[in-house]
Image (cartoon, rainbow, N blue to C red; front, side):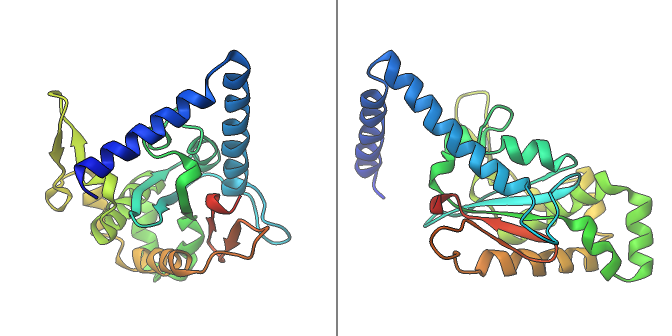
Length: 221
């Protein structure tokens, strides 16, 4: 897309918002509509998916995709119920303020602790020694290295611009832990790829489930 096309898209977006917010009543209606949508997405991200599909809680990794732009963001959390419910609301997470959840094609969630029983005992022991917090950071780092999400390729600068993030040379806690978890990451990656490649569900449904994760399709709501 050229700069002029981006400018045109921005103008259409701004003018549509100005029209939608043209009166106090419209503002309230807009707030209601957006919050109800975000609430629905949050419930799908963490709620029970039916018999045998538990609610999401504790440690998880997640990713947000849009059609065309691909994978935007990869994150991890130790409090998945709180974090994922807030993800489309945006009160404590920047993503929804930049790319509205109404545009998200799918959101992946993998509850990686459920996969610990499937990896070799020696690596499972190392994971136990590292602790869940470090393991989550390590898996997040490996997902970022592998899939290169668009919005984590750079960071805001104090001058109002952007600077590149060089995650390959990171010395973060996650980077250090990532070298200890090859089989756990392979198990996570298998779940991730399954959910990322799955077709969208039939009309009237907005989520699919694997044995350790789920994909939610906000655009289907």
